[in-house]
Image 1 (tube, rainbow, N blue to C red):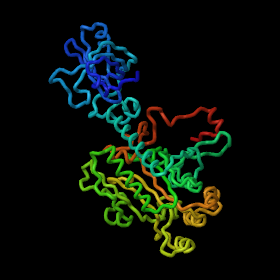
Image 2 (cartoon, helix red, strand yellow):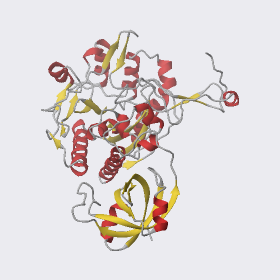
Image 3 (spheres, helix red, strand yellow):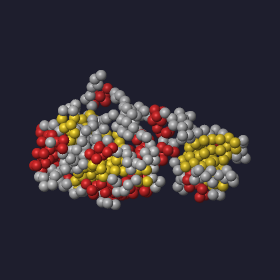
Image 4 (cartoon, one colour):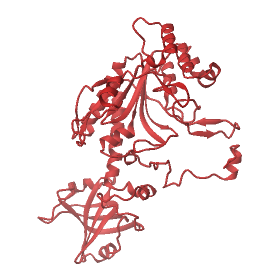
Length: 469
């Protein structure tokens, strides 16, 4: 017989059942012992009476977070003793047998009190205990529901999910790379991907045509409340798109996912407003404006698209132009403008060139961004040159992509949604750490695993590395 979940117990009224779970609380009322038994689906009250002496004696030992199996009869609670706040509040389990499966030390914080938040350091050190709390599990379950919805939604529209490598090549894409030393090739390194940007463009060259991935990305940059060293995004790409087709796909995906999984929330405006970058900066002094009527109303969702970003920005400290988004972002052509004309205009006045780039914003957070991409070899080379890369450097770092574009590359574009930030806003949380199972601290540490950590001399020798302090 399949395991019975606690939420299913009310349908077995008058029958004997077996339940497994954790002891949330234990209460002694006179001679009767009550426990709240918990599994991931809910809690139910279990009663131990002295007339069943053996099981009653065992129940006296029970403490919070012990793992047990309880066999008992499902009864209605006495009139006036019902608990309408929980789905099992009309019933209780009259214990017949108790098996203690696993004892627990006293937890470092009280898991039963949702309104009393422990300190973040102790929560992250004992994250496996923190995740037993209802709010944290709810966040993870809703995250699962959102990602399942995304997969089904895109699959129905001809997208296929394809995994791309985690061990790749270090290329300049905006943030510092996490690097991985090669044991077999001394002095050479892999890099963990800041995004699957080049791989998804290569998949378009490969003729996949519609790709997506729920993918982990890595950036060695300073953490903050809505950022982590490793994060998850919905990454998608399609060929022969217009900007409007991509925006329509994303706004309908977001709208339908909210309606299905968060019916209590209200989307302020649909279709989502489109603001140009210059309009957003002039009116709101931000490229991720919060468009809610009431900033304190957490159930109002004000989505918007910000479009027409500049293609380049000046880096004063480095005395060079850099891409606002990334170097593969397509410049906007003027009517009748040839590729040669555009390249000339970019080189003469890079500050005035606009990009076919768009961001998705929600309640003052950037939750995604994308663009149409450059698929022409010469145009991509020109962008890198304006950014200060020498021709030989371009070929060394991006030769594989430029070569691929010489084999019949279709026009393509896409978008990436930051799943962590999206879930943070939908769950009314203040930090992405509340919607990630095992997050890092603000300075990138894993307190539970004690990482990063040192490696021994033998490992260093194998990797051809030497620590210099």
